Length: 146
Image (cartoon, rainbow, N blue to C red):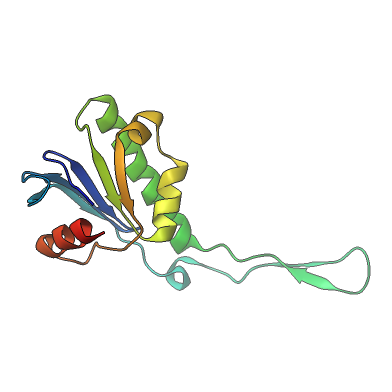
């Protein structure tokens, strides 16, 4: 993938977000951190207070349980929506012309649900991979290879 000079690169998952800028050129990217944000999101078992409820069927002899809410995943989805909102604000302020996003498949899908048309127009590449735990030089190499 080509990373144009001054391209805006977002590395995200449901708990961490890195906003990077390419100070290098297309062939030799040099990603610099503009913003970093993490959030605490404990496992679902630590956020849930009770087991899912059950209901008795009005027809027949069965009973049914309600699907359990995954509070951990809800928080990750909310964080992705918040990231998309920050991208919208920056796109509307003309902070970037070219945007590249790398995120795990589920997070990438959640981001796509919330893309503003200005963000979509500037989107030049996506990578469905979790790169949040990688150092910058490795992120550069992985993006160029893809």
